Image 1: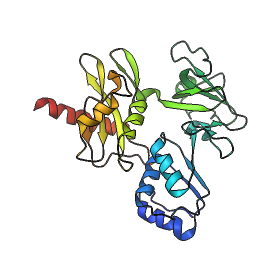
Image 2 (image 1 turned 45 degrees about the vertical axis):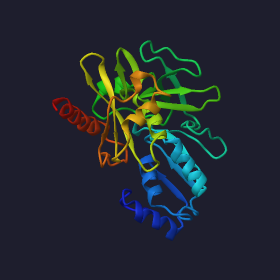
Image 3 (image 1 turned 30 degrees about the vertical axis):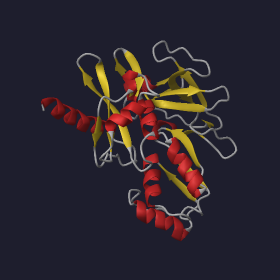
Length: 281
C-alpha cells in the first residue's frame, strides 16, 4: 500500500500499523516526521526500511533501532544512474556509510582539481560507471559531455571509499563552501549540530557571503527557544572555528522539495534576509 502524501506523517504511521506495511522507503526528513507521530508497536510489521537523498542522522538511526527495533539502511543513487548506485544490506552494513556498490557497478573517487584517482580513505569527487548510467541529457550534448567522460558519470558528490569498499558520502560539492580560502563541509556542520539538538528538531547549515572571508556559515533550526551560546560552545569541541555557525536562525518550517530533500537554496535565501535585517538593526 502507498499513501499519496508523505508529509501526512500521522496518517502514514497509522496506515503502517493498520495495514501491516512491511517495506518503508523515504528521506531522513520523512523518517523523522514518522518518528514524531509513532508510538510503541507502530513499526512492528516493518521488515525493510531504506533511506537516501540526505544523510541519516546517527541519533535518528539509533532511535528507530532502540525504540522500535527497526534498522534503517542507507543507500545512494541519482536520477542519472537509474537510480541506485549503492546500499547497505542486513548482511553487509556499515552504519554511517551509503553501503557498497550494487552488482556490476564501478565507482571511484578522484581529486576535484587534478582528477587523479584517489586511494582508499581519501575524499574527492565520486564517479560511477556501468549499464545503469544514462546515455545523456536529451538534446543537450554539451551538458552530457560535462558529466559523462569515458563512460564515467560525475555525480557532483564528494565521497570517500574505505578499505572494505564501503562508500561514505561527504555531501554535494556545492554543499562545500570556501571560508577564508579553505573548503568547509556544510554537511559536517549539520551532523555535529544535530547531535546537540533534540531528536525532533531539524537543522540546516548554509553559507552566506562575507566581505572578508568570502563566506561564513549560519544555521537554521525549526525550533524556537534554543540557547544559542550554549549550543555554539558545544560545537567548538568538535568543529574547527571556520565550520562553526556564526548565527543560528529560527525558521518554523524549513522548506522542503517534493522529494523530501531540504530546499537549501530557499533556506539560504531566508537566512540571507534574516542576516541582513540583523545587520541593519
